Image 1 (cartoon, rainbow, N blue to C red):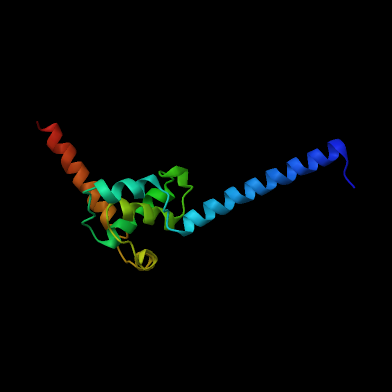
Image 2: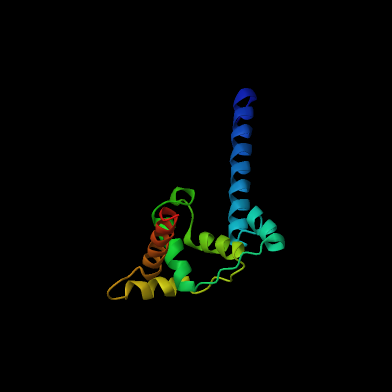
Length: 132
């Protein structure tokens, strides 16, 4: 079987494998518990006064745009985790976002209603700054 240096190497590799599996399992459990260990969740539930006052459809349009443009974690975040975190930040229970995405794909005419509105509002803001 194993002796001396081979046994030590085998045990070291086995322990390393087990440690990686434990770490992976912890991460999986935390993500399945809806990001319970996330510092954002701990801090914002006690201190934030932020409240999303738009519709779920508007929030969906904004968040999906940010994700596909890879502006949050370079796109390395699941849609579920992104919505969970933002839901915590804005004290807004996020549900049915997949239904909103489906409805957006069926829109005729302008498909990015909220983003277009944001763009117009930002242009108005810049114009006001120019006129000061």
